[in-house]
Length: 253
Length: 305
Image 1 (cartoon, each protein chain N blue to C red):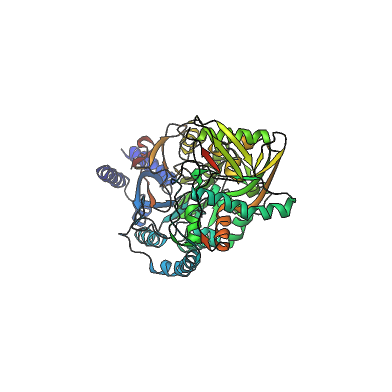
Image 2: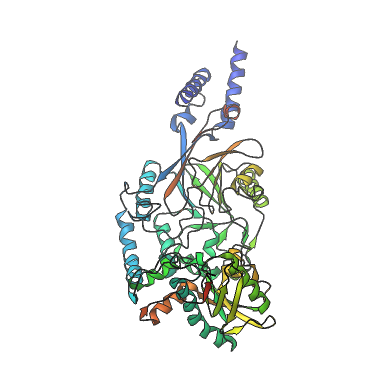
């Protein structure tokens, strides 16, 4: 009896000596808490954010230009006023940069219809408008490609059936969506010549299945965001009044 | 669960009675259990202000000041709390464009974040842009599979960090996504990406065997799961290929989960993978309860989600 008691004591001793400091994971309970207006905002944090918010808002909402109408990317079939504005603004803002660096001019601009993310409303145009229509950080690149690749591009545009924004390129499709006319600044496309196409880094990398930019002869990264080009364009342009024109059309018969 | 705890506590007392005075000292002064709370966010993307009432997707949700008061109340309830972020702190609102991440880091410091890992968008202003904001971060950046040795970030990011909360040792290591093809090379420069599975195995070896951590957490930005390429490394794949991780806190894929996912690791043991969407709309909260029950190994860990 006594021996047995001692035995138990030894076991107990051993057990407690080994285990007494060992905390073991026993149970896990997980949940997700939604952050919403039922929570009181922390006053100190709110006060800390306030001056930043006010500065950003003041800058974002300062009027840079005026739009004479509301422009939407769905207001045209093959070219839209807002798309033409995008492409023309990118040309005007980036060509001086490109010329200064290379002594050459940009031949044309191609962007994508999906990259226009909001409308421009009639009335004051602000930096906030720039953030709305171009929330992404994509930058302008100028790609040197052969005329044969321009033909691949016009072929792509004929099949895409979308108002991808273009500048300096003139493209006419026949009734069956075949390329009928294609020229750059009024001259027919020379398959052996090098053309400098301004686009964005996303499309250059094959975005929207635009596979014709690569392999390129040269790539010029301008370190100029599309959004900043648009905002700079707004700053320089008193009145925003883009129009749908004949740069990209399809014949009715 | 409550009932089982009661029964086990009862049998523990019974054991005490049997052995008389032994062990009384160890039990009388100590707690019956210890609770560690892990709070987490991911892909906040510079969303400092709440979404407005007219927002089409997330009306009246999010907001750092609200998150602050929520975290505060949870910490009051349990001071043994860690606050972690799984990356993509930067990019998404004009705050980032105007201040380059300064406000994001300052606010996370005010909210007393303990650690964050690095997301692909945290390279959006390049390594120099991230480096420039580091003085504003009063919390640690951890990444076990980005080698910054040949960059300006050298020495500023640790592979893991160990926290001691109420005597519980918690090892947290970071895991980043492959940058090639996702981030412009001129942004991440000589940052070297190392294999997530290999580095996780290395981390769990250090944290479990060498450091004897009680709890191991992987703070990941590799993405929850890629349905169209199921073999592609992701949190679920990583969980199944490793052992000794108790929780993977994920990011990158902006995955909203109805509840944390219970996954079997390479040893067939259950562990958790969680992610809370994006933009600071939600806060993840995982409570870990520890006790000294002797039968633990035969019973395993119970998970309530």
